[in-house]
Image (cartoon, rainbow, N blue to C red; front, top):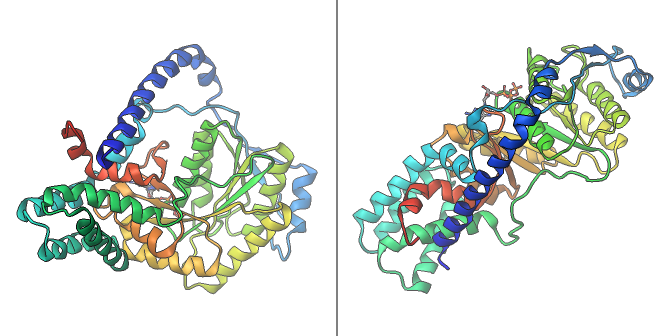
Length: 402
Ligand SMILES: Nc1nc2c(ncn2[C@@H]2O[C@H](COP(=O)(O)OP(=O)(O)OP(=O)(O)O)[C@@H](O)[C@H]2O)c(=O)[nH]1
């Protein structure tokens, strides 16, 4: 089966399944809508349980002796906008990658139209297009080499066959030798899992935590948030807004307090309440600020002391629109802390989505999730097939026999 046919089958079938499940959801909703409306209001309570009071004092070098505040909300499913419900994964990637598609795929189409024969000039221009899409020089070189070999192996002469070969190789380059498939958050199904979110200011960390909490809730897990960004003005309140919106508790101290103390309290509260996943926000640490990096290792130490094998994931959040700057942030963070996965946000906001490939190939850290918009449902697991589908969607959909 051709590669394009495989993609088309995979994503067209998925769309049908989404439509079927939406029809079912619609049925359920009409029965539940009254209950949801009643429980939508969230309330804030001060928690004075013994566990939490001890928690603060037990943190090493903790400067804070305040009692943690828990923004507690009633268990509820958030209201989704109609357009948030009906999109399939293929739709999401197609919409989210429209800027990159318009930039990259249309250039590839022009290239194919310009050169009939696959020759050196063709590859030279293709190289420029890939570099312009932020695929990264090393990855581009590797990709071009692979393409040249494939062209020889299959004896391809006509450039019209190249779009499919390029797509196939993009997926292969992403998957590398290990081909571990689509990677989700590493959560322990038996007991509390703790996930730490790191990254510089403004990359979309808080938004990502909110979206992730929503995803996990949809999967039936109980979730709690820790407001560990005590540094940036407004960060705690922003996380609280997400907590209310998604319907999960937020553990916080006041602004400027010790993040390790906040996280310690959150771990104790999560244990006491039998929560499945604790998502911890942290301050936007600039890579050159040693003290902030030390703060991060203190937070990690507290978590691993309290929960065996934790943190289960350290997710580095990067902004795709910052291009090669995101690459250098990734390098610095991975040298300082054990980054286990990447969330690449704002992929919808860039025409240079090739950065996904550069990150995966050059840093060898999996891009586990991508942000494809600002809505609660716009965080998707990164699937290289869906990515390539998004890149070539128009062409794939037009081609009957693809
Ligand atoms: N288009 C788009 N916007 C996003 C995405 N993710 C986040 N944003 C927006 O990016 C902006 C910054 O997001 P925040 O979550 O405040 O960033 P942050 O990293 O928490 O900021 P700090 O707390 O300062 O580190 C917000 O306006 C978000 O709505 C995405 O995937 N797509």
